[in-house]
Image (tube, rainbow, N blue to C red):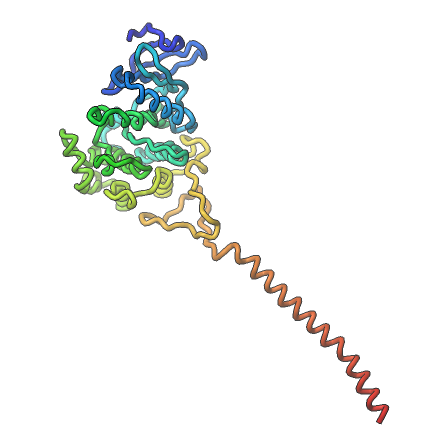
Length: 364
């Protein structure tokens, strides 16, 4: 496809932004709305499968419904010249993987604002019922002012529907970021995305992946069975508390991790104590990580890794039983009222008994 070609009779291809095993990403111009866009064109052999085209359409529609400052917006999708394509907002900057290669090891103060933004975007998708399935730094775009946006929601799930003998590392992306359950061929969950976020944070803080092998099958085994090297051995700047957070995100058992990216984000926000900085890069930051709705009488859940509360958050309220207080107050007033009635009743009988007594005495 040449740079001068017109895709979908609307999008003018201008330059190639990146290539991969499953797609090519172009910078283009939307001639109808006169704005820059990014277009991901899938491999032609993927596009020939009618069942995959339908699944891709469904996933693209679901991704287009995600509206969040830390998620790349999906504008359009279609089929042209025998290929599926998806049109997204154009984000100036670089992907996080390229930045890690250029920058090397990050300090916690540098890494946490970026990974917290990723948690905010992926957590929003989790609340909408979507699992990314292919969380990796290649799918995170960082602008020059350090704002991070996650891309490629739904594409990995659509690709997972093609014939089993065609599934490979090309389909699923880099196996370095697989969760153990994905490596075992099981269905991913929000906790799977949390594991992949943990791998990315580990890589940013240590400059190394927790597991490395040239064999995808060996990498899968390591994710399932091998504990990672303690990150503090590789970077002494990592505190014991942050190391424990990493160990929890990299737990082999999904139930031992943070349940969603929202929960992981809240943990990191509390640990980082950087609400002022985060407020400048995450719009409406105080509500970026809403808590999971639960009954009002349930006390706040204790986290196993940390106990600090961010300065921008209200202090936790320790409830006894909010619904019981009005009943107690009503019971006290009822007791007082009954006592007054009894007192008045007894007091009213005194004149009657005096009258009877005086009458009986006069008769004698």
